[in-house]
Amino acid sequence: MHSVTVLGAGSWGTALAFVLAENQHDTLIWSHRKDQSQEINDYHTNKKYLPDSELPTNLAATSDLQKALQHAPTIVLAVPTKAFREVIQNFLPYLSEPKTFVHVSKGIEPDSLKRISEIIEEEIPEHLRKSIVVLSGPSHAEEVVLRHPTTVTAASVDEHSAKFVQDLFMNHYLRVYTNEDVIGVELGGALKNVIALAAGIVDGLGYGDNAKAALITRGLAEISRLGIKMGAEPYTFIGLTGMGDLIVTCTSVHSRNWRAGNLLGKGNSLEQVLEDMGMVVEGVRTTKAAYQLSQKYDIEMPITHALYDVLFEGMTPKEGVDQLMLRTKKHELEDFKSF
View (spheres, rainbow, N blue to C red):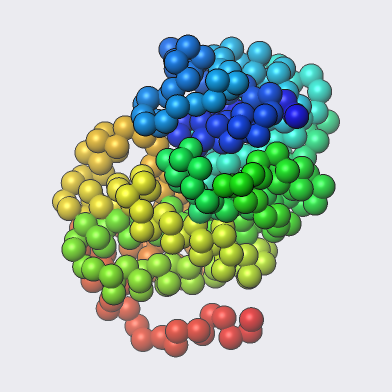
């Protein structure tokens, strides 16, 4: 048994805390809302994010950040990318010894263009972190708490740390693989949200399976192009955190990015969509970062560019699809002939 703190009581943070508690680890989940932590402690539920699920009775919650940080040597960071730096800066005063940080957020910070592990390295002094591990893959919280078979990847430059996290989470319904390609795992997890928004738009426009299959396939191509340019291993993108996560996020009603795109495709404004969702839609922010990365590395990412124009430049979803279909002729594999 290990002591673990999960920072963030949204759907995915709660689901991971559910798994850890079921694995008989001493698990404490932190919420910035006192009423939410009291609900978890008193009723063993988190109605806002997992309304139909009962949480393990051995899962405890707190809204006291200092208590949460001092509870365990392993910290799971399950907060939205937008809040990531702020949360780290808030808990730094309570760090007195090195911790293992496991992050499960899927995003890239606009403007700085930092991956999540890079933000951790930038904000937390080296003497206060044992290691950084990324936990990512095709996984909906709603299915994990139903104990449906799920597979994810623990990635770290330190093999021992990746295996430690593998052992923490693995059980009869959650299978965990290891990988040393942190760049590829993080980029796959973040950029698939961009393609999922576009997939939702395609469905909202009523274009059917042909269009979505093409979008997912060509989406993977542009994610891979950028990832390889940034130093990722090519084969990571045909694994769980590449193609696997892309499939689940582009095709499921559980996906908030797909749902947001679907509403956009049906004619809703971005402001209306974000208000109606009531939860963070990581793909919106990540689209801006992906667009900036494509310019920085001079990588062709037509789906990302079209979606950027729809989200931020006033283009209609129909115009965005037309822009993609009328591009100059190309060979399908021209970017990958050397692999």
